Length: 202
Ligand code: URA
Image 1 (tube, protein in one colour):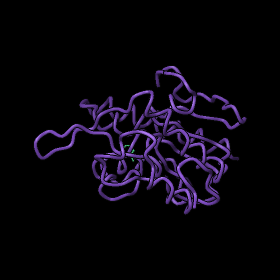
Image 2 (cartoon, rainbow, N blue to C red; image 1 turned 90 degrees about the vertical axis):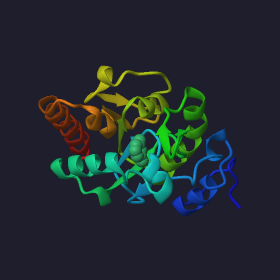
Image 3 (spheres, rainbow, N blue to C red; image 1 turned 135 degrees about the horizontal axis):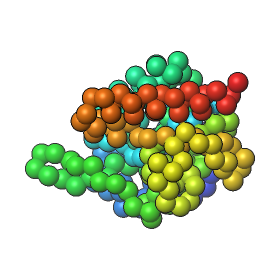
Image 4 (tube, rainbow, N blue to C red; image 1 turned 30 degrees about the horizontal axis):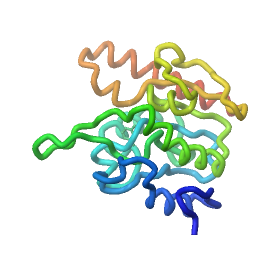
């Protein structure tokens, strides 16, 4: 049996090991783990922050409001969702209860670091040729240091194993922009960054 300390031989084995994860306390209040999903040999891997409320209940990444923004951007960039692998830097939903609601709380550096074990294994199994980091948490996980999105957005960074990484905004950021014109501009920038990442595979 693969434990949470030994490496998995397949994505199915990895998902089963992730479901037993106790590497940090975030597994305690969460409904379930949300492993990465997509083409097992995807050439592009996209990394978000952590599952949200909807993803925690469904057990699948990016199926709530941020997922709809991501789907729309992928479509605009002509990237089929089924051809990429979509995952998160942190695999459990971190939240603070408020009445009947569960309010998203950003994972801290220790939680991101503990969970990198799973992201690294996803990368080893899928072996993507391009990585897309959506938002500051994904950037911190993959680059190993706090990195403002604005400083790397649309740029190519090279990871320790030689894989190119493109920085991009997180889809939830687009949901928070009130001004329609600014939202459109930021959304177009996000689509351009996805296109740029996809074009590295040409
Ligand atoms: N936000 C994320 O970062 N990941 C999800 O899966 C959903 C929302």
